[in-house]
Structure formats: C-alpha cells, structure tokens
Amino acid sequence: MPKGAYILLGKPERVYHIVFGVLSPLIQIAVLVWLAVMFKDLPDKVPIHYDFSGEVTGWGGKGTLWMLPIIGIAVDIGMWGAQFLPRSAMNTGVRMTSRNSEYVYGCAKDLMVDIRLGLSALFASMSVPLIMSREPGTVSWIVVAAAIIVPVVRYAVRVSKAKYL
Image (cartoon, rainbow, N blue to C red; front, top):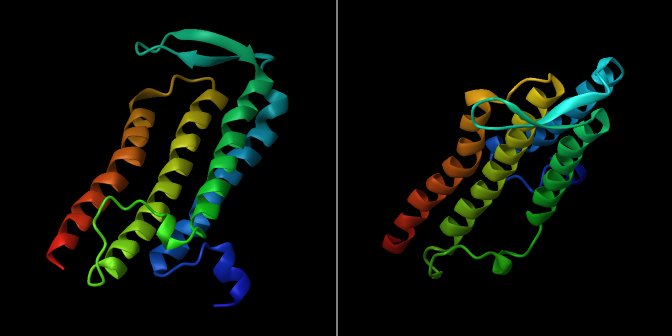
C-alpha cells in the first residue's frame, strides 16, 4: 500500500480497517453533500428536536441543519487522528504484559476503527431525519445504541481473554 494511502486510512492493519476507514468519512461527506443539494428546497423553519413521543419540541432556522454533519466530520477527523497516538497513550483497561501487549493493542486498534464508523453512523442517523423533517424514530435510536454499545462490548469480551495469554 502506498505510504499516502496508508496514512490516509489511519495505518490499517486488516482489510476491515481499510473498509471502515473509507466508509467513515464517506458517510459524513454523503450527508453533507445531500444537505447541500436539498438546502434550497427546505423551509426556512425546520423541526430540530423531538420528544420521545415524536412531537416537535424545538424549531430552528434551516441553517442549524449544518451543525450535525459538520460536528460529525470534526469527530471523524479527530478519531482518524487518534489512531496516530503512540500505543503507550492508550488506556486499554488491561494490565499489559510482554505476552499480551500485541493482542491487546490490536483489540484497541479494532475498537478505534469500530467506534469511528459507529460515530459516523450515529451522526448520519441523527442528521438524515432532521433534513427530511421527520421524527428520528426507532431506527435512529437503535443505530445510536449500537454505535456506542457494540464496539465497547466487543472490545471488553476480546480483552477479557488477555489475562490468559
């Protein structure tokens, strides 16, 4: 892999790191482009907050719709940059030994990649319904929960095996 691509993809170690490294920013860019295309056709005042029953509880100018995609891009850039921190800066939650360190750091790298894609999905699942002036609904809540819980549980299960290495 060319050095530029290696760096751009966040120093991938596995094929799925490459796939997730491409998908994460593409999701954010797609939402941003879609908003730019739709922007002129949106009403000047749009719903920006819903309660749990699906009722609109907040209105704002259509310019506020840019906030979530821009924050999503900023978070994605931050997660991409965090992959370049030295391994010693990682708090893995596991006692590191010479026997388990490579395994645990590999799990931590996977966690970073998983959370990066999860956060991209999270920001997209929050942005899309607002752009469409629809209540986020159950799917958005499932994406939000999965984006946070699944990578952490996967990591915890995997590193729990590290004490036996």
